[in-house]
Image (cartoon, rainbow, N blue to C red; front, side, top):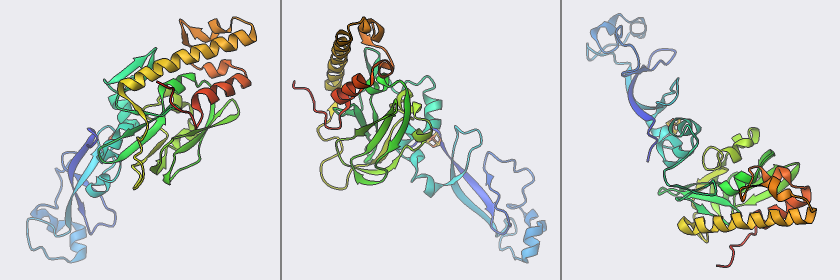
Length: 305
Ligand code: SF4
């Protein structure tokens, strides 16, 4: 499926002009154009070339091609038809393009099929890992990977995102720098990684602000051999049930922290039974590491059902 903002246009250009200028059908004023009329014989470039026209009504240097452009951009850039098919605009990957997301989902909500558990979005189309990552696989075999809304909600200050894997068949791995401490996030299955979302290195806050969209971590393809990328992952209603269990487990964790500290910490950290956004900012370093180990360990396993 292609991006709904991707448009096609016929474009014409002069193959003899020193600078190639595109004349786009319907987007360029062609009132004074001589190229497709007998007027081309008075064009200085045509005269300089000393060319002979087989068709007196059309310049032999006039070249026509099919181009594509993004209608969501204020100054669209024309891309030859064959090239745009390779990029995200001509594939399911458009769903992760920032321009598309700003136009299609200006309020940040991604899909009608997005379920909520205690205010945590859980899109139904995704497959989830026990350490709170997700994968979205498309019919073409293309896939995107990121962190889920549960982890995104806990992250407060995030100092950096680094990528331990950026290409090739591997288990996609990133490192979050939380309050000066590194925490590894490892997707449990192999994927043919085509790129990491390097934009997050300059703007790490995007990871938690838009975990299911422009804050994705990796894009890639199903691995050429071995287990499929969704092997052993949680999906659909099962995922909803699991996130509910995780929310209760987190409340218990906070209560334990409060009783260890001997203070009313639980009322600071919980808002009506749900942990406050950016919970990690309120924990001691030791508490933060215990929480990360309990919920986001690269070797995390599913709870017994
Ligand atoms: S740049 Fe983005 S919004 Fe524009 S056509 Fe491509 S995927 Fe769609």
